[in-house]
View 1 (cartoon, rainbow, N blue to C red):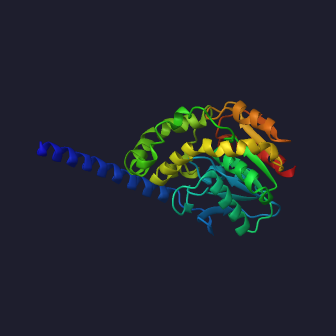
View 2: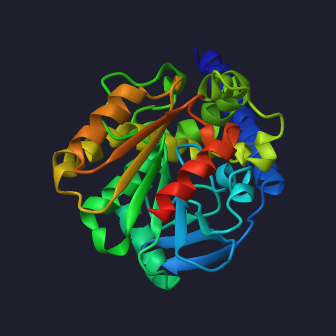
View 3: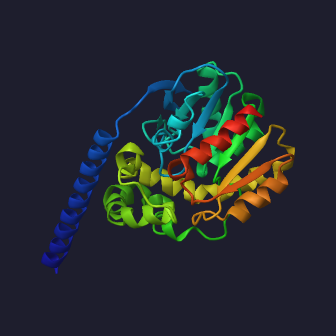
Length: 310
């Protein structure tokens, strides 16, 4: 009996060690292939990585979605907006931004981005949020409205969802074992399913072959990203339950852009409904899926240029 337990324990340890080694190698490779592109600024609670494209005129601050990082915007969108000063930000806990302690809630992220705006001396920039970044932007609009002059939301998460999108199932282990899962099964699972998941997230648009490096997609292959994603997927409904009832009090201009064929978030439930709840909000729909800043950069930039001018 004892020998049997020893064999099981040894096998378990070998498998766990192998998975941990896989995770460590994948994370190291991801960080080498997608290094930091910009500068860092310390804010209460962490250190944020950002890229400032420079230029004259009012700044535009851009926040990426879940499992993303700032290269989601620099992949194609920044080249379409060279006449604007863009501040691309790795959200707290994502990309090359680091946080103190556990992954921050959307409310804390909004506060940290507001602190970054102050640290960079930006005067009421236009705040852009894609996907989960849209939820962070909306949180700032209700909690720190004086920091921004308006919101431009691209395929944003704006409402609670009853069912998690199938593409994210299996990515939210119970909190007590989340760290262990991240360093064992999480990254290998993400690696093996990455191509299929990307296809679903981009659908019906094709996934660019170089998105992993040029678009920063490889940064999802890190245990910190697995834990961050699990936390945000679990916490998003709670955070949204506190801000949706306050949409009617948002006083800054809000514009929303959605791909008509978005297969990750429902354009009607997340776009039409929200546009009707926020005074004066506008909703524009174009062809494309969830990753329109990458796949339809020209149209997205034209819309954003119009929002900024308005």
